[in-house]
Amino acid sequence: RNMADEIAQKLGYTDEEIRAEKHIATKIELKEAIQLGMVVNPKVVSCEYNLLTDGSMENLAEQINEMEDENERKKKLEQYDRLRKNLEKAKGIPEILQENLKEGGKYIVFIPVGGNEEGKDSIDKVKEWEKQISEYLKNSGIEPEYYSMLGAYSDKENERQLEGFESEKSDKTKFMIVMNKLNEGVHVDGVNGILWFRPLDENSKILYKQQIGRVITSVDPDNPPKDEDRPVVMDFANNTERVEIDKEIKSNNRKNDLELLTIVVNWVKSHGDNLPQVTSTSNQEKRYAATLYRIQQKYIEYRNGIDNEGITEDERNNIENIIAKGEEIELWDRDLEKITKEESDKILEVDSFELKGNLHDFVELENEVKDINYRKTALKNIMEIEEWCKEQFDGKPEYSRRTPRTDIKGIKTAKEERELRLGKALNKFKQRTIWENYQEGKEKGLSREKIKQEYGMREGEIALVERYERVIEEYDYGNLNIQADNIIEIEKWCKEQFEGKPEYSRRTPSLGIKGIIAAKEGEEETEEQRELRLGRALRRFKQSTIWENYQEGKE
Image (cartoon, rainbow, N blue to C red):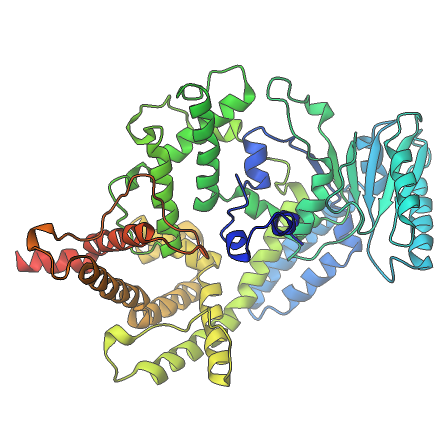
């Protein structure tokens, strides 16, 4: 459920305008808001001991026992045994609660959803959790006071419970027990943390952010909270590991960079075109300075064009929009105060969601085992992908070739279902660690043997990656097809604009039109945006290897 979209509909925005995000002034992700010092950075505490009791370690043992290579299986079992011994020494729920609860604090408790929240079962479940929490707090000196909000209560009763929880009249430590209430849309004053007993599945990133958002509040840049006053998230369900939020937090994708740059550019304009300084006493200004420097260093190579055929159309549009946005403050021509990567990482640190200790070791071992077991499936997939490509394109012109698609809409036949399945399998393999390591090694100019040594890759892994590469090189002419479509549209545009007019007035589509940026996905394109898109497509083609090789041959 997207509240921003629902409000926009009530305000009269069309579905098309909402898809194009015209109702959003600035869209910023949780990580970026923390990095820029706009909201508080919560302290996340996980319960490693629960890996022994929630079935996680049992599942891992089963996966290890499925491994076919006896030596590999023995090695992973040794790692598993060491991890299990360490987990047996880890702190349990009572110790974590006693170390992190503040006497007189207010905490939201998310409990597992089960049965009918609007029935008597949910009320009984709340009572059970009250007893359980009291048992955890026995001999701690903390006196609990319980509240709850449920679908089984009337609106009036839920309001009464919330008022009591927010009240400052009691010195007891307050716990608000909920299932689905307080996920979103309700701001609760003075919350010191949450207790997470409700496990989320791996696809619940939005719900993760909604629930953790109950303790994330805006920050006064001139009076940031002290470390001891940061809200605490006691993650007893290990949701941070389960939904892999740390991968998302660590990523710096181009779409997020455009949003970040937009915020900093607006700050610069509102401060008389003065750039933020890393030496400032304001934490927020320091963060803005580090963000601006990171983005400048990352994208300055693209100021004169994008010479990388591996970049998708959407990525190109984002890069071009980043270059255009930076030009508003002459970012690419200004000498910024140099900030080392270590300094930048420290300033922009968002360490709350990083997996550490035994939890980190568990995830690493689990991923390694999954990778090994996945190889058997990957080999079967590439054999079927090879077969599909030969069936479709053997004896046909090279330019017509492509690999299986991943975006077939309105599937009607078994053939289309098969193609989609194989396309997704190919795409999934290209996201695996062995593929990424091999490609990174090639970019560094490492030999096959050096790649094996540096990344610890075995011969079988290298051979598997190379087999996928051969299929991609032989059949993936998708980019050439896109270029052909573009040149057809450019020809059409030129005829529309200049047919019947004097030759001296003719030109190709413009590369830059003042005040115009590329249309967003789903947004209806104006004539100026169309010209800009075609101009950039023409420039990209003239920067491609096939153009350069052809021109070199002519010379």
